[in-house]
Length: 287
Image 1 (tube, one colour):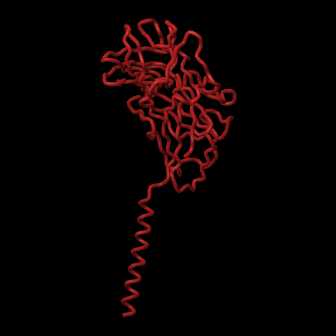
Image 2 (cartoon, one colour; image 1 turned 30 degrees about the horizontal axis):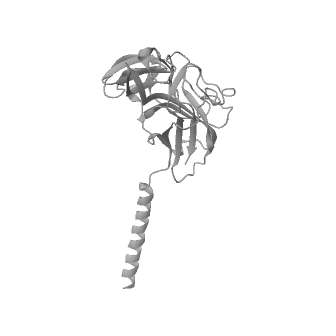
Image 3 (tube, helix red, strand yellow; image 1 turned 90 degrees about the horizontal axis):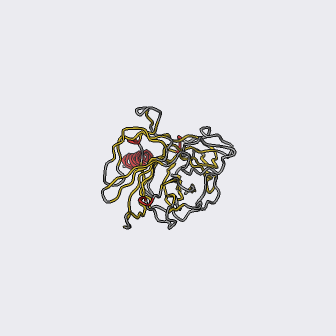
Protein backbone atom coordinates (compact mmCIF):
# COMPACT_ATOMS: atom_id res chain seq x y z
CA UNK A 1 0.00 0.00 0.00
CA UNK A 2 2.85 2.36 0.91
CA UNK A 3 4.61 1.72 -2.39
CA UNK A 4 1.37 2.43 -4.26
CA UNK A 5 0.97 5.79 -2.51
CA UNK A 6 4.60 6.68 -3.27
CA UNK A 7 4.09 5.77 -6.92
CA UNK A 8 0.96 7.93 -7.19
CA UNK A 9 2.74 10.84 -5.47
CA UNK A 10 5.72 10.53 -7.83
CA UNK A 11 3.42 10.57 -10.85
CA UNK A 12 1.68 13.69 -9.57
CA UNK A 13 5.02 15.46 -9.07
CA UNK A 14 6.11 14.57 -12.60
CA UNK A 15 2.80 15.77 -14.05
CA UNK A 16 3.02 19.08 -12.18
CA UNK A 17 6.61 19.64 -13.33
CA UNK A 18 5.74 18.87 -16.94
CA UNK A 19 2.73 21.20 -16.72
CA UNK A 20 4.88 24.01 -15.30
CA UNK A 21 7.47 23.59 -18.04
CA UNK A 22 4.75 23.55 -20.68
CA UNK A 23 3.14 26.72 -19.29
CA UNK A 24 6.53 28.43 -19.30
CA UNK A 25 7.26 27.32 -22.84
CA UNK A 26 3.84 28.42 -24.03
CA UNK A 27 4.15 31.90 -22.47
CA UNK A 28 4.87 34.53 -25.15
CA UNK A 29 8.18 36.28 -24.70
CA UNK A 30 8.01 39.97 -23.77
CA UNK A 31 8.25 42.46 -26.61
CA UNK A 32 8.93 46.12 -27.25
CA UNK A 33 5.79 47.32 -29.04
CA UNK A 34 5.23 50.56 -30.97
CA UNK A 35 1.75 51.98 -31.59
CA UNK A 36 0.61 55.12 -33.41
CA UNK A 37 -1.64 57.78 -31.93
CA UNK A 38 -2.81 60.71 -34.06
CA UNK A 39 -3.49 63.83 -31.98
CA UNK A 40 -4.90 67.04 -33.46
CA UNK A 41 -4.65 68.82 -30.08
CA UNK A 42 -0.94 68.18 -29.59
CA UNK A 43 1.30 71.24 -29.88
CA UNK A 44 2.19 72.34 -33.41
CA UNK A 45 5.98 72.52 -33.85
CA UNK A 46 8.40 73.59 -36.56
CA UNK A 47 11.48 71.79 -37.88
CA UNK A 48 13.58 72.59 -34.80
CA UNK A 49 10.92 71.69 -32.26
CA UNK A 50 9.68 75.20 -31.46
CA UNK A 51 6.00 76.24 -31.39
CA UNK A 52 4.89 77.18 -34.91
CA UNK A 53 2.20 79.52 -36.17
CA UNK A 54 0.98 79.78 -39.76
CA UNK A 55 2.86 82.11 -42.11
CA UNK A 56 0.90 85.00 -43.57
CA UNK A 57 -1.05 83.98 -46.65
CA UNK A 58 -1.25 80.32 -45.64
CA UNK A 59 -4.18 78.18 -44.56
CA UNK A 60 -4.15 74.89 -42.65
CA UNK A 61 -6.38 72.25 -41.14
CA UNK A 62 -6.01 69.24 -38.88
CA UNK A 63 -6.75 66.21 -41.05
CA UNK A 64 -8.60 63.15 -39.82
CA UNK A 65 -5.89 60.52 -40.06
CA UNK A 66 -6.71 57.05 -41.33
CA UNK A 67 -3.29 55.40 -41.34
CA UNK A 68 0.47 55.83 -41.36
CA UNK A 69 3.61 53.82 -42.12
CA UNK A 70 7.17 54.09 -40.82
CA UNK A 71 10.40 53.36 -42.65
CA UNK A 72 12.97 53.40 -39.83
CA UNK A 73 13.05 53.17 -36.03
CA UNK A 74 16.07 53.99 -33.88
CA UNK A 75 16.65 54.37 -30.14
CA UNK A 76 19.26 57.01 -29.26
CA UNK A 77 20.97 57.08 -25.84
CA UNK A 78 21.38 60.87 -25.77
CA UNK A 79 21.19 64.08 -27.78
CA UNK A 80 24.72 63.65 -29.09
CA UNK A 81 24.07 60.25 -30.67
CA UNK A 82 24.48 60.64 -34.43
CA UNK A 83 21.80 59.33 -36.76
CA UNK A 84 22.49 55.63 -37.28
CA UNK A 85 24.76 55.34 -34.24
CA UNK A 86 21.97 54.32 -31.86
CA UNK A 87 20.10 51.04 -31.62
CA UNK A 88 18.46 50.60 -35.03
CA UNK A 89 15.41 48.41 -34.50
CA UNK A 90 13.80 48.49 -37.92
CA UNK A 91 14.40 49.52 -41.51
CA UNK A 92 11.72 48.86 -44.11
CA UNK A 93 12.52 47.07 -47.38
CA UNK A 94 14.02 49.24 -50.12
CA UNK A 95 14.43 48.77 -53.86
CA UNK A 96 16.30 50.20 -56.85
CA UNK A 97 13.69 49.12 -59.41
CA UNK A 98 12.80 52.76 -60.06
CA UNK A 99 16.42 53.91 -60.39
CA UNK A 100 17.71 55.47 -57.17
CA UNK A 101 17.32 53.58 -53.90
CA UNK A 102 13.80 54.03 -52.55
CA UNK A 103 11.34 52.71 -49.98
CA UNK A 104 9.38 49.78 -51.42
CA UNK A 105 5.80 50.91 -50.80
CA UNK A 106 4.38 47.50 -51.68
CA UNK A 107 6.08 46.07 -48.58
CA UNK A 108 5.24 48.88 -46.18
CA UNK A 109 3.47 48.12 -42.90
CA UNK A 110 0.52 50.50 -42.64
CA UNK A 111 -1.21 50.97 -39.29
CA UNK A 112 -4.26 52.84 -38.02
CA UNK A 113 -4.66 54.91 -34.87
CA UNK A 114 -3.94 52.74 -31.82
CA UNK A 115 -2.59 49.85 -33.88
CA UNK A 116 0.83 48.25 -33.54
CA UNK A 117 3.13 49.21 -36.39
CA UNK A 118 6.20 47.36 -35.13
CA UNK A 119 7.21 44.96 -32.36
CA UNK A 120 10.44 43.20 -31.48
CA UNK A 121 11.36 40.68 -28.75
CA UNK A 122 13.00 42.55 -25.89
CA UNK A 123 15.85 40.04 -25.91
CA UNK A 124 16.80 41.47 -29.33
CA UNK A 125 17.05 45.05 -28.05
CA UNK A 126 20.43 46.14 -26.72
CA UNK A 127 20.32 46.71 -22.97
CA UNK A 128 20.71 50.35 -22.00
CA UNK A 129 18.93 53.61 -21.35
CA UNK A 130 17.56 55.61 -24.27
CA UNK A 131 16.46 59.24 -24.06
CA UNK A 132 15.43 59.82 -27.68
CA UNK A 133 13.35 58.10 -30.35
CA UNK A 134 13.84 58.54 -34.09
CA UNK A 135 11.19 57.40 -36.54
CA UNK A 136 11.29 57.96 -40.27
CA UNK A 137 7.70 58.34 -41.43
CA UNK A 138 6.95 57.25 -44.98
CA UNK A 139 3.25 57.31 -45.84
CA UNK A 140 0.13 59.07 -44.57
CA UNK A 141 -3.54 58.70 -45.41
CA UNK A 142 -6.08 61.21 -44.13
CA UNK A 143 -9.31 63.05 -44.85
CA UNK A 144 -9.48 66.81 -45.46
CA UNK A 145 -12.24 69.33 -46.09
CA UNK A 146 -12.31 70.92 -49.55
CA UNK A 147 -14.29 73.56 -51.42
CA UNK A 148 -14.51 73.20 -55.19
CA UNK A 149 -16.77 75.18 -57.53
CA UNK A 150 -18.58 76.50 -54.47
CA UNK A 151 -19.33 73.03 -53.08
CA UNK A 152 -17.96 71.79 -49.74
CA UNK A 153 -17.05 68.14 -49.34
CA UNK A 154 -14.51 65.77 -47.78
CA UNK A 155 -11.73 64.11 -49.75
CA UNK A 156 -8.96 61.66 -48.95
CA UNK A 157 -5.25 62.32 -49.41
CA UNK A 158 -2.47 59.76 -49.68
CA UNK A 159 0.88 61.46 -49.18
CA UNK A 160 4.39 60.04 -49.37
CA UNK A 161 6.77 61.81 -47.01
CA UNK A 162 9.71 59.40 -47.02
CA UNK A 163 12.98 60.43 -48.70
CA UNK A 164 12.10 58.52 -51.89
CA UNK A 165 9.42 55.89 -52.51
CA UNK A 166 8.99 53.36 -55.29
CA UNK A 167 5.25 53.01 -55.88
CA UNK A 168 3.61 50.35 -58.02
CA UNK A 169 0.08 51.48 -57.31
CA UNK A 170 -1.99 52.67 -54.37
CA UNK A 171 -5.51 53.71 -53.41
CA UNK A 172 -6.09 57.02 -51.65
CA UNK A 173 -9.58 55.67 -50.90
CA UNK A 174 -11.36 53.52 -53.50
CA UNK A 175 -9.66 54.32 -56.81
CA UNK A 176 -6.32 52.81 -57.86
CA UNK A 177 -3.49 55.10 -58.97
CA UNK A 178 -0.79 53.44 -61.08
CA UNK A 179 2.67 54.96 -60.74
CA UNK A 180 5.42 52.35 -61.30
CA UNK A 181 8.11 54.89 -60.52
CA UNK A 182 10.05 56.58 -57.73
CA UNK A 183 8.47 59.59 -56.06
CA UNK A 184 10.41 62.02 -53.90
CA UNK A 185 9.21 63.34 -50.55
CA UNK A 186 6.03 65.38 -50.91
CA UNK A 187 4.21 63.43 -53.63
CA UNK A 188 0.47 63.17 -52.99
CA UNK A 189 -2.83 62.14 -54.53
CA UNK A 190 -6.28 63.40 -53.64
CA UNK A 191 -9.50 61.45 -54.16
CA UNK A 192 -13.05 62.72 -53.87
CA UNK A 193 -16.31 61.87 -55.60
CA UNK A 194 -14.52 59.28 -57.73
CA UNK A 195 -11.97 61.74 -59.13
CA UNK A 196 -8.19 61.73 -58.58
CA UNK A 197 -5.76 64.65 -58.65
CA UNK A 198 -2.02 64.41 -57.99
CA UNK A 199 0.65 66.85 -56.92
CA UNK A 200 4.14 67.36 -55.51
CA UNK A 201 5.00 69.62 -52.58
CA UNK A 202 8.11 71.78 -53.13
CA UNK A 203 11.47 70.22 -52.12
CA UNK A 204 12.35 70.90 -48.49
CA UNK A 205 8.86 72.13 -47.61
CA UNK A 206 7.78 69.08 -45.58
CA UNK A 207 8.14 69.73 -41.86
CA UNK A 208 10.37 67.17 -40.10
CA UNK A 209 10.63 67.96 -36.39
CA UNK A 210 14.08 67.51 -34.83
CA UNK A 211 14.65 69.38 -31.53
CA UNK A 212 18.31 68.24 -31.39
CA UNK A 213 19.25 69.45 -34.86
CA UNK A 214 22.34 71.23 -33.45
CA UNK A 215 23.87 68.09 -31.95
CA UNK A 216 22.33 65.38 -34.12
CA UNK A 217 21.21 66.63 -37.55
CA UNK A 218 19.31 64.59 -40.13
CA UNK A 219 19.80 64.64 -43.93
CA UNK A 220 17.73 67.06 -45.97
CA UNK A 221 14.80 65.36 -47.66
CA UNK A 222 14.47 62.63 -45.05
CA UNK A 223 11.53 62.34 -42.68
CA UNK A 224 13.31 61.19 -39.52
CA UNK A 225 11.16 62.74 -36.81
CA UNK A 226 12.98 63.00 -33.47
CA UNK A 227 11.58 63.33 -29.94
CA UNK A 228 12.50 62.68 -26.31
CA UNK A 229 10.75 59.91 -24.39
CA UNK A 230 8.45 61.17 -21.64
CA UNK A 231 10.78 59.26 -19.31
CA UNK A 232 13.98 57.57 -20.54
CA UNK A 233 13.39 54.07 -21.87
CA UNK A 234 15.49 51.55 -19.95
CA UNK A 235 16.02 48.04 -21.29
CA UNK A 236 17.61 45.55 -18.88
CA UNK A 237 17.18 42.33 -20.83
CA UNK A 238 15.34 40.84 -17.85
CA UNK A 239 11.86 42.17 -18.63
CA UNK A 240 9.00 39.74 -18.05
CA UNK A 241 6.24 41.84 -19.61
CA UNK A 242 5.75 43.82 -22.80
CA UNK A 243 6.88 47.43 -22.99
CA UNK A 244 4.53 49.53 -25.13
CA UNK A 245 5.64 52.81 -26.68
CA UNK A 246 2.74 54.97 -27.82
CA UNK A 247 4.06 57.25 -30.55
CA UNK A 248 1.79 60.29 -30.40
CA UNK A 249 2.04 62.37 -33.59
CA UNK A 250 0.82 65.95 -33.79
CA UNK A 251 -1.61 66.40 -36.68
CA UNK A 252 -2.38 69.93 -35.51
CA UNK A 253 -2.83 71.95 -38.74
CA UNK A 254 -0.45 69.55 -40.46
CA UNK A 255 -2.10 70.00 -43.88
CA UNK A 256 -0.99 73.43 -45.08
CA UNK A 257 -1.52 75.39 -48.29
CA UNK A 258 -1.08 78.84 -49.81
CA UNK A 259 -4.45 80.47 -49.23
CA UNK A 260 -5.37 82.61 -52.24
CA UNK A 261 -8.70 83.81 -50.85
CA UNK A 262 -7.47 84.23 -47.28
CA UNK A 263 -10.47 82.34 -45.90
CA UNK A 264 -8.62 79.30 -44.50
CA UNK A 265 -10.61 77.00 -46.80
CA UNK A 266 -8.71 74.68 -49.12
CA UNK A 267 -9.90 75.67 -52.60
CA UNK A 268 -7.72 74.12 -55.33
CA UNK A 269 -9.73 75.73 -58.15
CA UNK A 270 -9.03 79.15 -56.62
CA UNK A 271 -5.28 78.61 -56.85
CA UNK A 272 -4.59 77.16 -53.41
CA UNK A 273 -1.41 75.06 -53.48
CA UNK A 274 -0.36 72.40 -50.95
CA UNK A 275 3.00 73.28 -49.39
CA UNK A 276 3.38 71.06 -46.30
CA UNK A 277 2.06 67.71 -45.12
CA UNK A 278 4.57 66.83 -42.39
CA UNK A 279 3.43 65.90 -38.89
CA UNK A 280 3.96 68.66 -36.36
CA UNK A 281 5.74 66.86 -33.58
CA UNK A 282 6.07 63.53 -31.81
CA UNK A 283 5.70 62.40 -28.20
CA UNK A 284 6.80 58.84 -27.38
CA UNK A 285 5.18 57.63 -24.17
CA UNK A 286 6.30 54.39 -22.49
CA UNK A 287 3.47 52.31 -20.99
